[in-house]
Amino acid sequence: MSGEARAVIRPLGEPGDLGWVVMAHGELYAEEFGWDGSFEALVARIVADYAAGRDQAREAAWIAELDGRRVGSVFCVAGEGGTAALRILLVDPVARGHRLGSRLVAQCVDFARAAGYERIRLWTNDALVAARGIYLAAGFRLVEEEPHHSFGADLVGQVYELELAVAGGSQEGAGDSQGRIEST
Image (cartoon, rainbow, N blue to C red; front, side, top):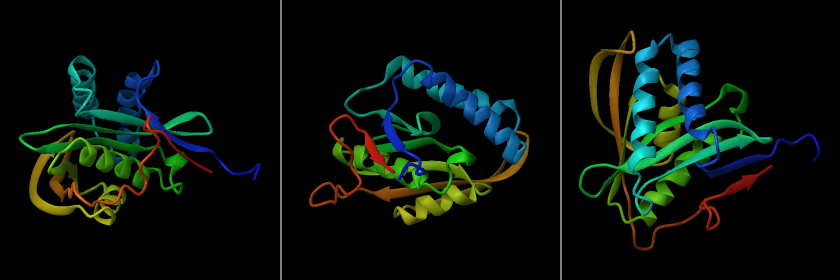
């Protein structure tokens, strides 16, 4: 047991969390996909908007840690009408293989369901193959695709959506009352 990593998903809110989300996205997407600083600026705007005006009953964010080190994030923010938006999912390459991406998405979906949203949507790009696999495995379906040039690259933007069944839905994977999930 001593050789196993300790993975935790906790609510965002510790000092440095917000800045880490922006920095990690900027560095990782530049390294893995060659995206320019406009992507980091987009993430900074999403994080700043969340920090400045979060509706605590309908919006939340989580940090994944591996052995006490930040390695992932996801945000659930209010979209239009009864729709939640899953935003800025990230798992650092050092933490891949621990199912943290799936667990972050499940945490976000469970929160959106509990907050009373009718559906949850996300926007991603076709280059993010691993994330797409996580979304599809969680039950999301592709509802829109459109080519665009952003972040210094030619991409295909994709919108995925998941209908949320509020009554009788499974809460499997939900964390404790603080939103914390642990595993080894």
